[in-house]
Image (spheres, protein in one colour):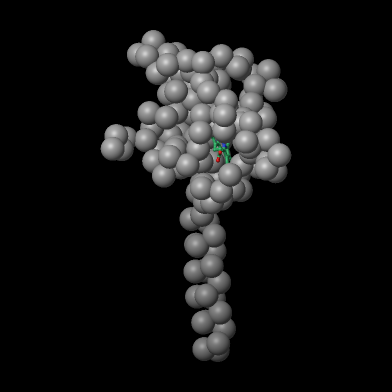
Length: 152
Ligand code: HEC
């Protein structure tokens, strides 16, 4: 009798615990590990952005990030990686506020991922898929860099 009651308590705790994870975003995979495949990384790291982060470019990048580019759906409006579209994805979307991540990545590596996606994950190939142009991707990348607020 005691055992049965204990089992019921345990079961309801498990039920509550799994219910409360609905709506959670899965943790991101190691953000410091490179995403560009070895064979292409050298080239990618050398590729420089053709745009400067002027106020006009940043405004365009923000508009694209939140609109046509669909980035905010998964990465969230603040870049925290908590957009509604990312909730069912494992690994979760990158937290773009992480300054350590930005320091580790060259612009060309960010561009590679926005162009080709991150293979084996929910990060889509937005340029290859025709969602945005290369020029638009560069404006978004300039804006994305501004999510890191550490100006040291
Ligand atoms: C459908 C959801 C989704 C959309 C839309 C999306 N992302 Fe992602 N993004 C992800 C996920 C999931 C990851 C994590 C992939 C991984 O861990 O390799 C990711 C990773 C990234 C990364 C990290 C790459 C790296 O080198 O580690 C960048 C940068 C990024 N996304 C930028 C963008 C931009 C810019 C857009 C819009 C143009 C965008 N994402 C749209 C889901 C999304």
